[in-house]
Length: 417
Ligand SMILES: *[C@@H]1O[C@H](CO)[C@@H](O)[C@H](O)[C@H]1NC(C)=O
Ligand SMILES: *[C@@H]1O[C@H](CO)[C@@H](O)[C@H](O)[C@H]1NC(C)=O
Ligand SMILES: *[C@@H]1O[C@H](CO)[C@@H](O)[C@H](O)[C@H]1NC(C)=O
Ligand SMILES: *[C@@H]1O[C@H](CO)[C@@H](O)[C@H](O)[C@H]1NC(C)=O
Ligand SMILES: *[C@@H]1O[C@H](CO)[C@@H](O)[C@H](O)[C@H]1NC(C)=O
Ligand SMILES: *[C@@H]1O[C@H](CO)[C@@H](O)[C@H](O)[C@H]1NC(C)=O
Image 1 (cartoon, rainbow, N blue to C red):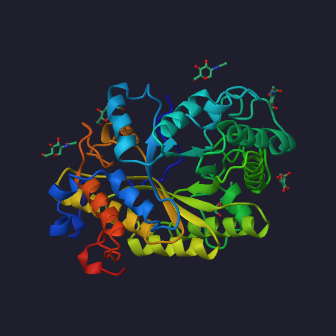
Image 2 (cartoon, rainbow, N blue to C red):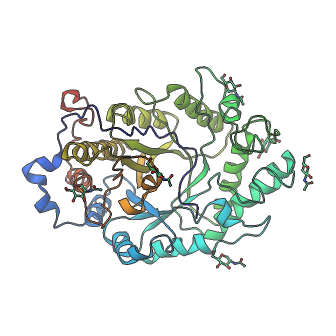
Image 3 (cartoon, protein in one colour):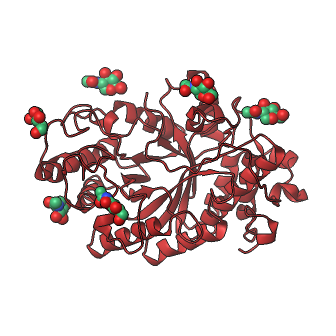
C-alpha cells in the first residue's frame, strides 16, 4: 500500500523541542472559548464564509481522503467528517499515476472515481493529483521510451485521460508535483532547477543522476499543463491547474533558492503562454524552531504568486509534534492558525488542505522516530484537538469580518502581521 509521500524534506527533529514559544491563541479569548466553539460545525462556518462571498469565490477547507481499505475501522467517522468538517477532498493515493494507468495505455479510474463520488455524494469539492508516483511499466524506463514517446504520447495521454475521465466538476488539479531540486543554488536556471532534481522523466531512475538521461530539459511541464488545459476545455471544466511542491516559502523558510526556482519556473511557463493557474504549497511542518514558515513569510509567498497572476493554495498541511505537552499543542495550534490566516486573508488563496484527517491515519506515524507526531487536527480516536478549535476560531473570526490576528507562532513578541 503506497500510503506515504515520497521526496519530502521534512525537517523532523526527534528530540523534545529545545524552545517552545509563548503563543497567543484566539481560543484564549472569551468570544472564542472552546465551550462555545464546541456547538458549531466547521462546515457551518465555511458555509457562512461562502454564503457571504467573503472570498469572492468558494473557500475550501479540505483533507486527503484515503482508500476505504486503509482504515475501515474509521469509515463512519470519515463519512461524518466529510459532511460536517471538510468541504473538499483530495485523493491520498487513488488518483496517482500508478493507480490510474496500471498498464501502458490502459486506464482504470475506478479507484479514483470512487473517492470523487464519495465527495460529490456529500456535496463537496474534489481536487485531483497527478503525482510522480509512477506505475511499474514506467518506473526506471523498462520499455526504453524515447523523449518523443514520453513527450508526445505517454504524458499527454495520462494527463488527458484522467482529467477527461473524471469529468467537469473537479475544482483543481495538481498537474505536476515536486519537479524541483532540493539542492538549488542561487542563480540556477529553470532547466538546472528541474534537471538537478535527478528525477524521472529527466533521468530513468529517480534520484540517480548516473542513470540514463531520458528527457533533456524542463519542457515536460509545458506538455503536462498544455494537455491538462486541452482536456479541461474539451469537457468544459473550470478546473484550476496547479504546480505543487514543498519548501515553497522564501523569506525565512527554508530554501530561498528553491523558492526562486519555483517562481522562475512559473514565470517562464506564464511567459511561454502555458496555462498554469497556481502553486500548491505543500505544508509538512514540525513544531520546532525553523521547521515551519512564519505568517509573514507565508504572506510574502502569496503576494509573490499574486504578482505573477497566480493562485496559491496551502496543501498537505500537517505539523509534527516532538512531545505531548500543552505548550507543544498550543504551538501546533498557532502554526495551523497562522497558516490558515495567511490563506484566508490573501485574495489569491481559496484552498487550505490537510494531509490526513486524523492522527492514527497520518503518514507521520509511519516514521520510525521516537516522538509523539500527533500532526493532524484530530487525535487517534478521532477527537477534536486544540489545533482543531483554533482553526475553527480563525475561520469564525474571518466569517465575522474580524481583522487578521497577529502572527503568533514565532512567539507573541513577534506580532508583526
Ligand atoms: C480497476 O480498478 C478497480 C479498483 O482498483 C479494480 O477492482 C478493477 O478490477 C480494475 N479493473 C480492471 C479491468 O483491471
Ligand atoms: C532497454 O535498454 C536496456 C539497456 O540498453 C536493455 O538492457 C533492455 O533490454 C531494453 N529493454 C527493452 C524492453 O528493450
Ligand atoms: C546539481 O547541482 C549541484 C550544485 O551545482 C551539482 O554539483 C550537481 O552536479 C548537479 N546535479 C545534476 C544532476 O545536475
Ligand atoms: C515537449 O513538448 C513541448 C510541447 O508540449 C515542447 O514545447 C517541447 O519542446 C518538447 N520537448 C522536447 C524535449 O521535445
Ligand atoms: C497526550 O496527552 C493526553 C493527556 O494526557 C493523553 O490523553 C493522550 O493520550 C496523549 N497522546 C499521546 C499520543 O501520547
Ligand atoms: C523502530 O525503532 C525502534 C527503536 O529504535 C526499533 O526498536 C524498532 O525495531 C524500529 N522498527 C522498525 C520497523 O524499524
